[in-house]
Length: 96
Image (cartoon, rainbow, N blue to C red; front, side, top):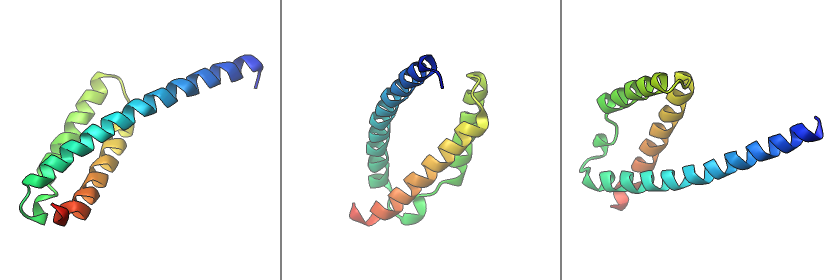
């Protein structure tokens, strides 16, 4: 790789690192909201809402297409995020 390309790569990676830091703050905020939702649930079987998950993924697909983002990428990200928060809620349900 040429020195110019290395410099460009370094700059882009720096931008990605900054974006990752912003994402961390968003994830923290989302986690706090999920904690509030969890406090409202009386039974563990309320954790997974298939209809809501389906609707979320449909909305993400629409938004992805509108914003010219590959919907396979966003679908995978959101599915994994949803599964991660389901796991989080299950692990923290009794700790209310």
